[in-house]
Image 1 (cartoon, one colour):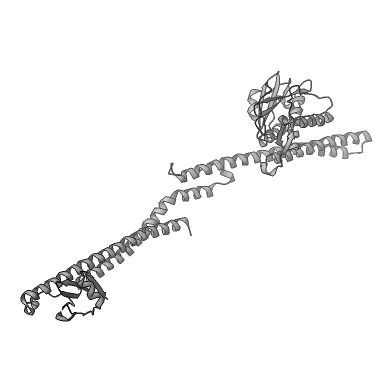
Image 2 (cartoon, helix red, strand yellow):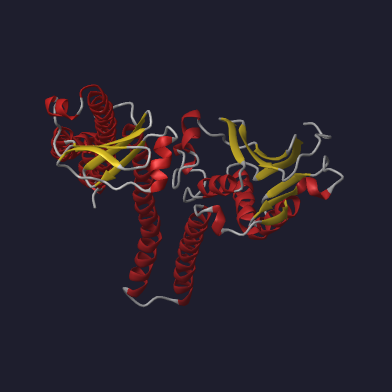
Length: 453
């Protein structure tokens, strides 16, 4: 069942139930009023009859107006009939009912649609019985009016509910049509609703925010595939060129050795790129998919330094531990060791690679509830216009492209790793003076800032 049909049905049932309750209430209240009014008339009829008989005898009884099915019966003190007039129903009273009447209680009896009243008049008991033809006719007419009126009202409520639901859900239909029209070719399109201040407008804004994220992810993925393809195509082209040249004619052993060395370098470049892409994909995953455990930052810095120096012994990496805290917990965070080690190694390698003397200084310091690690070099610096793009995958500053080789993955990977650990990363740089990259991580528990920068 569609929402429109469900809303129409619920609206119709709700309003129909209210109308039905209202109609039944009117019918019951009118029936109660008819009954009370008719019993009052019977009461007056009984009193009038007994008074007339007392004053004028049985002769004057024929001058009184007669109701439909009327019968008036008068009983003496011995419960014997001393007067009876009319052709209507003659109820038989029990001794208990006679006693109640003589005690001053008025009794009212109903036999189908025949209604009876019994009253006391001096020492006599007067019982009047009649059929309220006029009242029941009006009651039946009222019942017919209420039934047909309720059915007509229920039909009109259903139509009104359908129109109401259609109007209320029109923005939903608009949103559905617009969403169906959005595809990969026009993912920049956004939803528009005619009503600006209701819940459906808020839903449209939520969809637009989701489309913004999807468009960003789509553009990032497309750029990622394009750059990755380009980066992989370059070493493949070099490898194929070297092999084609080597196979054109017989060569000596040194030439083949040099060719294999060049091919091996390109293979290593491809391996580094593939590893970087895998690390980037892993760092881009949800934090729930990564196992975090207590990790000492100083140990990871030493491990990253050792691994980097084993690859490039000419690098100089100075780690400042002069302000280390007394407690080991001040250097422990919840993290993933392999990812953090990769991030630190990337920052150290960038500092050394883009410095003329191949050195970088690493300094650990503390602030309230957080630990900071600064990677500073005295290299070429980064232009101001390139700073906002440093953490984009495959981005490389034009000023540093000719200085050192790379794929533009390291800083993007490092940024995602830091964000994955609820940290922050900032870059300060001046051309010709050097660059300082500062990484901050929150500590698991609050600690006093005993050491100040």
